[in-house]
Amino acid sequence: MIDQGFSTPKTEIDDRIEKLQKRLIQESIDGALILQNTDLFYFSGTIQQSHLYIPAQGQPLLMVRKSLERAKKESPLSAIIPLKSPKQLIPLIRENGLKPPAVMGMELDVLPTNLYFSYKKLFPEVDIRDISIPIRIVRSVKSDYELNLIRQAAAFSDQVAEAVPNLLKAGMTEIELAGMVEAQARRLGHQGIVRMRLWGAELFYGHLMAGPAAAEPSYLASPTGGVSVSAAVAQGPSFRKIRRNEPILLDYVFAWKGYISDHTRIYAIGRPPQALVDAHAHMLDLQEQIKAMATPGTAAGDLYTAAVKIAAQKGVGDHFMGAGTDRIRFIGHGVGLELDEFPFLASGQKTELKEGMVIALEPKLIFPGQGVVGIENTHVVTQSGLEQLTHAEQQIVSV
Image (cartoon, rainbow, N blue to C red; front, top):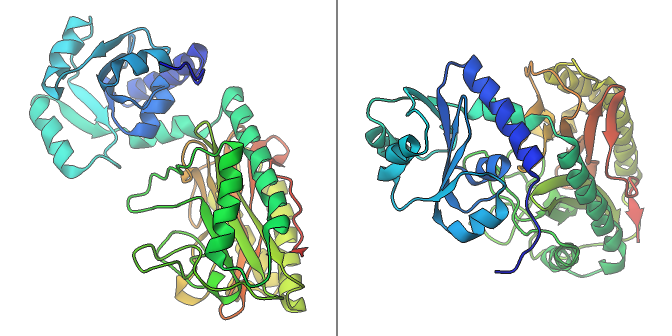
């Protein structure tokens, strides 16, 4: 087998497990059974088909169906054993010196109902509880190791954004330009998969749309939608040709070794109408104001409230983060291994920011029939506010 050298350091995995174990003890849960790919990778360093049992006290046990050999190469855990069937779970837990749980946590936010019932049969005497919130809280504060990977992803985001002007030509379709931009991202090492936790949420690289098409709403929890290539996708670029003097939205994710950078930039062949240029400038100013407010201890929902107020003061409140009933009620979201991590800068959210959280801040304005302007950058929470990690030109780039 080729050694790709992708292993997460053992010290990193140990620290994550220790933090979750503290949460398990606080919640009076004897152990957690981790199944979802992203959580599995976070706590074990591998997404090979496995069951990871993390006791509240003691060493974790990784039970692997496929591929055991690869899991042993990728994960720094010491106890990695084969698993032929889920029916072996309780016996294997016992055989490896661990006490079977009376109360067990599982990721009930993402576990399909039929699987839940299957595990209830496998653990008939066990009280199964949702462990998803504690897991997401642990994951929301990034280590120096994680921040380094996110910084690398952000640097690649900048390279993708800076490549667009050389690819953009009048008369090309949105989907044609998207393919060229995505090829550039792939060449740089984009992993190709953008993971999201929300049920039914899907994304392929991101959104690249122009003019009125960019302002087309969709089902996605996003201020932008797009016409797309069919109703089966219902978001993103379409076969529409890009025209002169209309804003072109590039809202793309760069995923590097699992970790995500999310950014938005606006381009134009020529120059958009002055009203849209002015509106874009308002979002740049709003971004700077929110960055200064976003210090540790600030409630995430307060930042959304402040942003709505600033947009209204600038006279663009009716277009902020959507139009009409299609408006979304957040201005940012956590990023890490998934695109929709804690915290959410959303209406009513009381979660307090902590140093080391990573947030994609995305103030945008939607003008039906005209287009979309605005900005998005990935930031890390510091004592003095948000440190911006993506640095490509933020003004509208004219070609």
